[in-house]
Image (cartoon, rainbow, N blue to C red; front, side):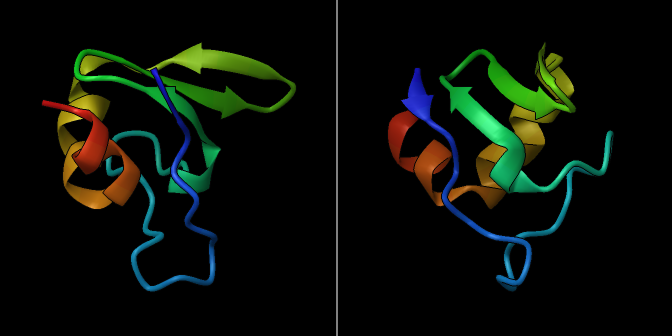
Length: 66
């Protein structure tokens, strides 16, 4: 898995996920099949719907996923 997306909340492309509304900066790691999202004090494995949407938003995810 790659490191999370480096975008910050004030970046124009830092919109949240349409499913959970989490900002992209919460992505801890990702690959072609799954993502780990920071969820409060814990971590959450994102469902497949998140992966498809975030692949189009996150430049790190686009360059590391097939």
